[in-house]
Image (tube, rainbow, N blue to C red; front, side, top):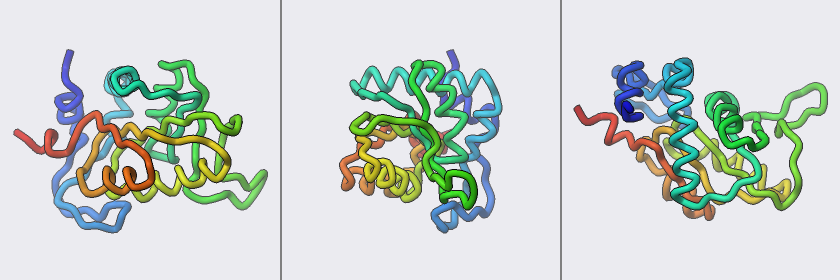
Length: 175
């Protein structure tokens, strides 16, 4: 089987140039996981590798959670793979309907495994975790497809959350 690193390179999920990241940081490369999640074989590979990490790290979860939009396909694939319900966190509450920021029904004191496409500083997933914790949910783990190794690990650790990467950017940047 092809390694995930090779699969990400194969679908050209890493691009070089001048980019501004969601964190506002400038970067000479961009990890475009949407290239990978648009390829069914690679999306399935990601879900399988996350399920293996869940077993390896003894992660207990009642729900799969993600931040819209990048994490949604990954979370859906994992939800189907693990047969666990899904919780999606919007970046902002909507102005109509229920005006909720959390999509999905849940039970207080339940455990949520967060999945992310790319982690840089950890800021967006940390906001989502705080929102879930304020609703009485327990979040102790985030599994990310690619860790850019720019601080997310330590930021999340300070919040009592373990970041588990499938691939580190240093592995992707190796020839």
